[in-house]
Image (cartoon, rainbow, N blue to C red; front, top):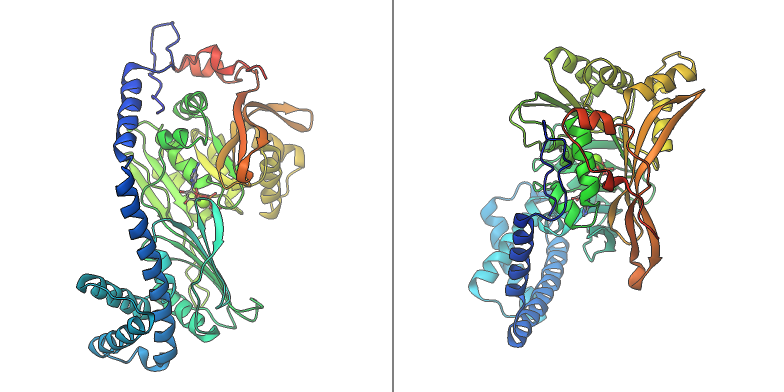
Length: 475
Ligand SMILES: Nc1ncnc2c1ncn2[C@@H]1O[C@H](COP(=O)(O)OP(=O)(O)OP(=O)(O)O)[C@@H](O)[C@H]1O
Ligand SMILES: [Mg+2]
């Protein structure tokens, strides 16, 4: 567990980040709880039997669902009353279970009927996956191929749609519920589901082999700094460094690929912001879960079916500047709002944060340059770079490695300009060492040995980080 660094106002002695008594106690408690969970042989056998049964039940349910789709007339489905539908489902379940030779107790039967009802009336075959807490992403490639992401890895599921029409019907149901439309003339849609999950669909003719759907499930439980440290996303030293960076109001850009953990990292970093500050957040889909008291959340709005009523992130950002924020957090900078973001960072809203889609700190800078150019701002490249160099202080690179683990692979400081080039220095990085069993990537986090460019600033603000955290480790 990462123990938050205690702000030191006067005392010149650098506080320690080593294990404190309460931390040791915490770890001990965790170990004890883990031991408690260790089961006896007979208990393990019980659990195994039960999990086999659950697997079997899942198979049966899939089978029943297939039957249901084959038997039910989808066109009249919306018109059938709830009672009619339930009766129909009960009959199909009974027959299906008999054929499969499975006997269920009363509550199991009730549960399965209810599930099937939800599936038929709700989001169809997706319903099971949406309810499965171990699933992060759902990716549909046409009616016959549905992938999910579990523990950072993609796997093919046995979930299927009856045909193209069935899939389109479900998509339509989802998007019309949020007041949007998707059809041949406007074949794509980006929406947020009622539970906060992010939904994107592309339908034929642009999607060649049947509709493509991507769902990023919303998890209420955002990972905390402690959990990220525990999962090996970064080290306690890096956490201490980041705490100082956030608390001393450096402007931070979290960069990474799709699904690499950018939003999660941004959210965790925000926990270092002081409760007394007014924070305004701007997102395309409200995902951030800030713990502070004083938070104003805004979400952009795409144009409606007639192409009107759009409220872009840029407009929200401009408006945010009139709302007297201490900090502005933009969920992801992807377009013209970059200008206002850089300006805000340069003009008194320091301590602002955002994420950007890029593969390295250098790449993130070029992405920013490109976005400025795309926004139609005529400015010499050097001036753009100067703007970026003085706006952004820190680049935090996150990455999803091949083995599915997500790690903070680099913390890089922007130190200024050297001629035409933005100068940077990496302070921490993840060093890969070898690939072990099952493709698992082994490595460790190292300090590069460079002392932070902001060390003096941290010290002045009372975050006197011990020099030892910057010391390069041997090996
Ligand atoms: N270090 C981590 N360890 C385990 N799971 C993580 C870690 N970081 C993020 N996740 C999980 O990975 C998923 C994707 O994370 P997140 O939404 O933060 O990624 P993202 O880069 O913002 O994605 P996108 O590009 O779609 O915006 C989430 O379910 C999150 O809980
Ligand atoms: Mg994100």
